[in-house]
Image (cartoon, rainbow, N blue to C red; front, side):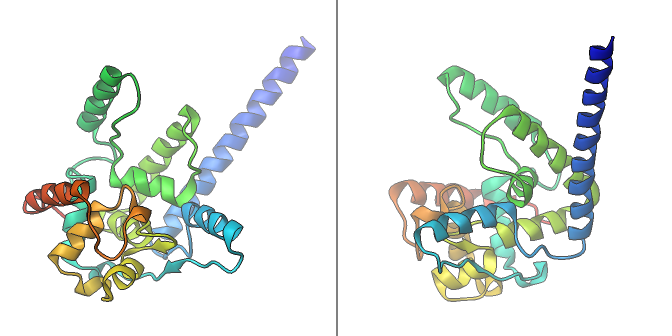
Length: 230
């Protein structure tokens, strides 16, 4: 009987700790719905990796408001990363189903279906580990983001904290690093290139392309006309 009481107390304590953690996440999200974060968990992790090689390493990052980011970049990123961004509730269930079927056919993970909201949840708070508990936490944070913010704010945060090169974060730093212009002045081709490199941003520099990247850019150009942005 005493063991059962101890177990009940332990479970209650774990549940309380879990609730407190979720409350902490949601409080931060509510604040970031109005104020710009100084950094993200992903940026801090990348900085640690860079400083392991060079103690003086620093990240390139400069926050800019939504209106100061090229509409071309917004449209290209939505076309590349999350075509249903405006319409879904944080999860593209059709894309998830297709990815699961493809992975099952291949017998390994070859396709994902993360939305911009899910990617932002991961960038803001989470580690890079792949596990079911981490995926569950990502889903909860995604729900919180969608509940606390409109699509414009979610896309604004995503574009300001996406990785776009070795130690390069956000649209402003990316535009200046790769093309020598501000995020507001990116043209269509520059925007398509930046959207195309998002899955592997540290492989490419200064507008350089490969055959694979050129094909990906063609797909993004074809989709941009129908991409809806907030």
